[in-house]
Image 1: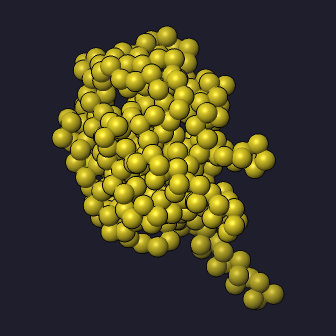
Image 2 (image 1 turned 90 degrees about the horizontal axis):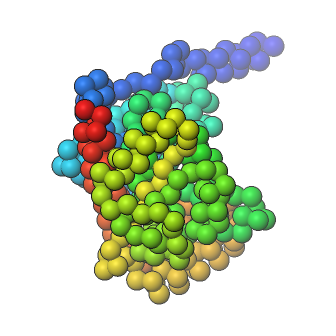
Length: 324
């Protein structure tokens, strides 16, 4: 019995790390939101799980600087010792980029991770939800999560989709990650009522590839047009879901399509052979792409997120100007 009591006491201490669970805003982000300056949300999963070390920290800083250069304030979102932070400072960003035990947090994981005092990196779904709760309307990421290949058997679908169905935020991305099923993802986005517009295109981009193979109903030509769409959604008061702004890479900057297709086929075969499932699928395939393309996919990935950060910042600037 004494041993059981000690175990219960240890368990109590472990779960009682944080006693308040409000969002904490970084100083720069708090000031910007207070005075109505444009702010862009950024995810931390790309820092902890999406890019290899040591590139991840360097690129994370470049993403934030790109947002600043376009006139907005970056708000990288993550969890530090159980507390959700909207606008990580450099020390916190470094922590998530360098320590080994960083949990990958979707929306459903946030409360448990907070209660256990975890360090965590937020996915597109979690970042969107936190950003919207903090009053941030624009978010930049690389590629959207979506319906996985063979989902008819596995039922594997990213929580990004259902979260965007109920979260009023604009997500600038290079379409859906090409390791997923872009056609099925577009069908689910339609069913869930998530708006999708192409940025200067009527074709849905395929992350590493400029053209993911599917048409879009709508396109916009400027950050100001996106800001107008967001204003119309707010003033109508009818649609509480997200808006996907699909921003393709220029053709000359995409990954070589033949190399892409060959690498994807090899990666999917490895996935099945090694039995990788769930949250591990995306980082596994991205790591395979990095290795098999000898870093070419990493260079493309970095170009994607920097371009999206720039566009998201210009949308946020245009939205702030409308509101002013």
